[in-house]
Length: 265
Image (cartoon, rainbow, N blue to C red):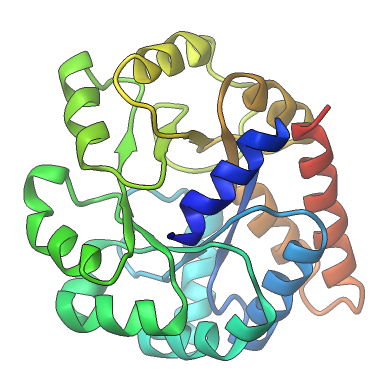
């Protein structure tokens, strides 16, 4: 069984919601990313989304854009990310998903990417700029290695569009909770619960809410409606503010622990 399926199954049995932190791989370097992944697992994370830095992101706000620029300046590549994941896999049981725009994967080659990602220990893939209608080749390549391809549903998605995306997704549905790019927000969308109900009418897959969730209180509210919560920019911002500090790992771990605690209140 894919680790993503197994984790959501276990959480459902326990009556818990998933916490999925996001990290930009290689920000500021891959050794730090490795340490953060292990710390986040130790502090309660249930899955982890690992961003592949890209020079021309469409869905990321300025916080993650800056992280990508720092990572790229440090020489991070998709190959080096997979090497890092392969080296830490024996110490980490978290389901790991790569979030990448389609160009780096296309350049790598779909078949080669799927084979090497699976061998490294990657469990799933999120590609925000690839619609399911154009993803057949990638879905076929990843499915051959039991890699789940997760697609995104937006607040503007129609019922028919939700049906199409849900049919193409494996592992879970990534619900983008706001209109716009990633980034911390002061409040959650007012139509969050209504839109999650629309998605549940079309699929039995777990639903994880991302984009804009940035505080334990927001994680608590979102986790009452969804099966999981994804927190990215708030974590990346904290890491940016604490770069070079000896207690950076502890601060980041404390924040992840507070988010996890909020999902089970």
